[in-house]
Length: 151
Image (cartoon, rainbow, N blue to C red; front, side):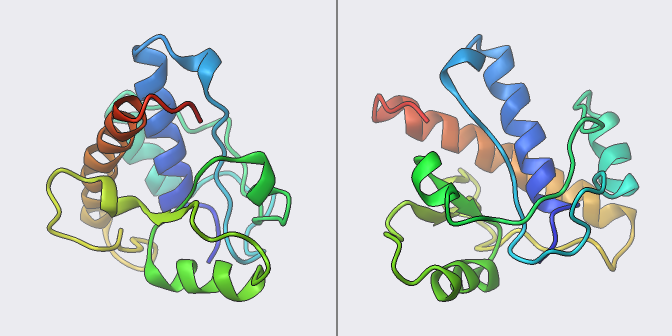
């Protein structure tokens, strides 16, 4: 998939969480899509607007495609849905997939397994995605802290 809705929203939300916690220097965060759609473009304006309404800035983000080096550069690769999970495993079969997980696996309110793609829907879909991502991002930060891990 591309990199203009869910993943940059997750990146911006998690970045804000670690900034608020004073942990910015302990993390390197980036988002990427499994496909080259929209590479170099800013996030979808509906994602930017919905995040902006919550005080989350996404204007500096630009879409990119996941690369082989991401498996070595990052401690965790977190995907939004099963399609992206399968795509990573297919595209990079020789890589260790134990660092790949679903974003919603960190959510306290696990009503969803996947973060739905809001691209073809209305404004409420973008709000729903942010609700899910804020829950999951906090769970991710709690998970990292509980294991005394640094990403």
